[in-house]
Image (cartoon, rainbow, N blue to C red):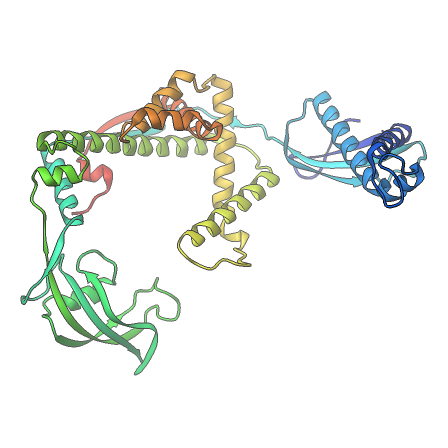
Length: 433
């Protein structure tokens, strides 16, 4: 029977017919196999009467046989009709009559859409370029020094980068509110852990000094405090000034340079920065290409694939919350939160599959090897990391996906209007100093 289209452009319906004699024969064969080894009280193994075996296992075996037969018949039929099934089919008993010689089922499913692609000619692609020099290395060293800073108590007023120990209590309409107080709370000024207005109020304070000030929470803060003005009373117990380590052999060793050679340390930092810069440029270029492909593609989205992607995003979000220490038992995140993102991901995936297939952009083994080795370069034992990648098929599939995207970007760039724009390292990396 030819698959029938429904009102949904991608949905199809098939009526599947299973000869009753074949089904009953398979049920009987499976029950006989079970009878050979069946164990029941009062009978020796394999000597249980067939009718007792049939009563005990008949329903389960019938369900299994029917499921297997429906699945096989469906698979044979879609292959015969060259249908590309998206997602999982839904099976239901057909209502075409009660023929004694056959069982009939309907299969409802979606097929993959036709992807229509317009030309990329004239689409803009901006490729940023930058270099890593002494200034970028020095900035990175300064950041690394701050990360390894120790703090000593000081009598001067608090300033940026100082570590303060404070007690505070906040009141809304004269009453304390949940989460608005703390004792012996540590904060580094300038790190942005607290609201900017709160940190600004701490600037210029000394140890054992108390201050009361008003603070208005921003509109995007948690609902009960958004746009509300509260009064904080803060006591700075200790002001600790940062003490940065010297850039010497000991510092180089702390960064993994075994012999403490400072020149080698700077070379390694430069190599790492260049690697990160390359990744960021690739990401920015890829994002533009993907947006261009989305703009020139026309296709219907299989609802089944979108629903499956929503489920994956929901699971991922719950796992992220768990990783942050939050209780997620019985947590049900609304599907509406993920619909737009799921549709975008499904659409892009279908477009990429079409582009790769049509233009023969498959990932070559040597391309995969190159990407793996590039990833491994930043580890202490690169070869061990390479072996780790090649020991797991799923990890290699992830790398293959990256290579495919790179191939698509390279292919698309040949048709797009490409301009090269010189930028600073900080601009490309989106670093604000």
